Image 1 (cartoon, rainbow, N blue to C red):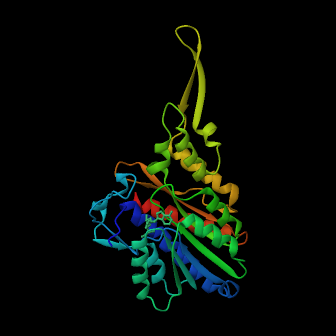
Image 2: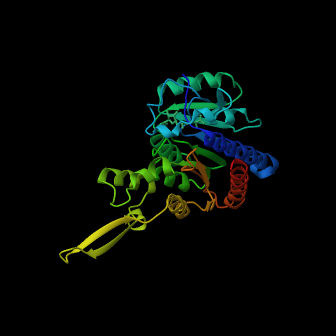
Image 3: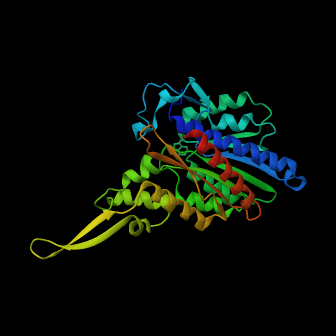
Length: 300
Ligand SMILES: C[S@@+](CC[C@H](N)C(=O)[O-])C[C@H]1O[C@@H](n2cnc3c(N)ncnc32)[C@H](O)[C@@H]1O
């Protein structure tokens, strides 16, 4: 099955991930104590291993502008699962999670080409599996990198809390900033209840209502007071609101996430980095931040 989505930002995002995974492994390999730790890579929205530029339709995606295939030079590029498998030395164990049965079959095929790697392919909803995995592991002598690369608003805040609680995971997360979250925030009224609930699940708090909307009262023609509700944040403000939310639960967070733009110059995604290990967070954030800065400058 040809898995098709994305645009130039897809390559940028994967480049950042690849650079970080390489740096992570080289640090662990270069330090006698860290070398003894078992390294795990988890791809929570693993895809198929390849990303194709052509497909019969993009109907499976909620918003058509997540597909700007023409920007790819080649017919396909390696996806995150393949990038992680190609690393040598790599991780001691890999978990590839995807809720799409066909994607899981593709991953099964992909893994055949890497007989030396210990890989578990999990057909599941990422939130369910990841929360269980984070809580059931005792994390002794183990560290992990988790990559969460959803199409839209699939990642629940409770999953991020479970990751942060492990104190052992470095997280890369694609936050659907302009692609989904901003679209659920109308300009002159608060979102309807079911959109608001979806935002609560992703942001993990109802506080966005006060942060994103201002209420004023004005006298109308009959001198009654009319209440006006207005959105009072830019897309970028929403992104930084999310970064600040991450800072409430992770010990280290990259303060300057990577804004990923589509061809209309809309920041459709935000690539965020957060670290949960007290000892490792500072160097991890510093490496992640410098990779983001470099890729952002190169990509503009
Ligand atoms: C943007 S793609 C991931 C691409 C992949 N990271 C890559 O680089 O090739 C999103 C993937 O998430 C899967 N997916 C969607 N909802 C999911 C969920 N709730 N849990 C796990 N996987 C999900 C889709 O089937 C799809 O393969």
